[in-house]
Image (cartoon, rainbow, N blue to C red; front, side, top):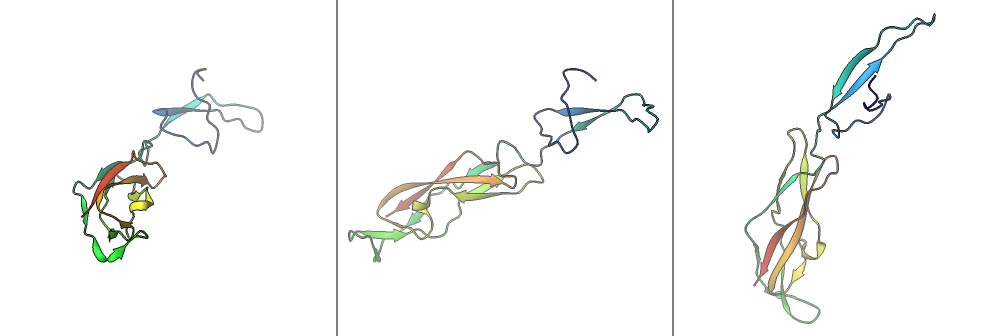
Length: 141
């Protein structure tokens, strides 16, 4: 066994921090007779990207019209944010991911007055690794 190799035990969680893990084994019978050292290595491939999925936010703004039936507490006309396509995410071949909205003040159903807003979105893969955040523009007129 080489001194600079990692020590591996049964049940140990292996990550792709190393490209492979060498395993050394010696079998000993009840009489104390041991075999020569047997070795093999374990290669680790990530199911999901540990840096998180790639987030591709929608490019077009979400347009919302103000309406007379929507007013704020101060009496200002507003528009109600509809459900909207936020974008897509991609990850490694066998890893699912989903896009979600981080800031809830611009979530569908929110009342917004005239202006331009930036909704922050993110993506998370099935192992919980998250993307860098992205933005979707909401224009209320």
